[in-house]
Length: 236
Image (cartoon, rainbow, N blue to C red; front, side, top):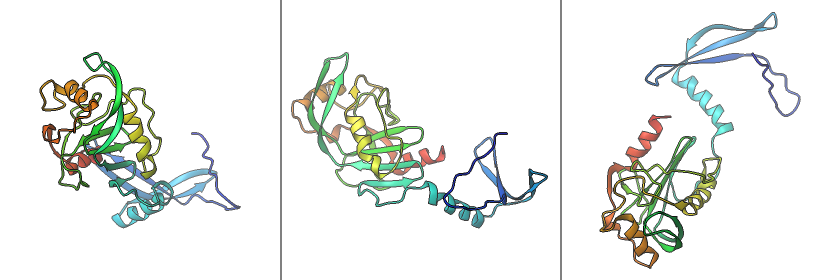
């Protein structure tokens, strides 16, 4: 076992006091025990343990959160925030996009209208969905397929060589949005991105020519914001 080196400010003596043991079942359930710990003959020894109560686990989580969780003013567009997980919405806007496609879009870029969007990020993935109403979503808001190339029907974004922020907090909202819109959209990752004659290629050609975004043609995912967030957090 490698030596553990603890860095701290000031002259503080630390002594081994306790240990937590976590057990995980095949289906992801967690069981925890708390043990006293002592150093005997220069070796750490665990004393008999007891099951952790919800109260003691909450105390531990509170101490850990002081070091690990985000603290600061929450961005006004954030709709869900938890450790390493965040969801926010982007109102309908006009932004430049870039294409490098093998179809009639080819290599081109331009300013165009975009639908309201919801972005969700966690440690493993980055997703985007569209909204039909240009208003802040809540848990029951229905989500629609984001009609962009490089986005799967699950909403997950194919990152490719795009650089994304290291942290997940309110300060990373603008960098995530910039990374998405400044990427090169190359190909469709799902069968139907939009309910429109000519499909997504025709949609984006029309948008690049100044057409308003056709919100009524968005594809319903049959999922709500709560559904998607629950799926993300259940996997953590």
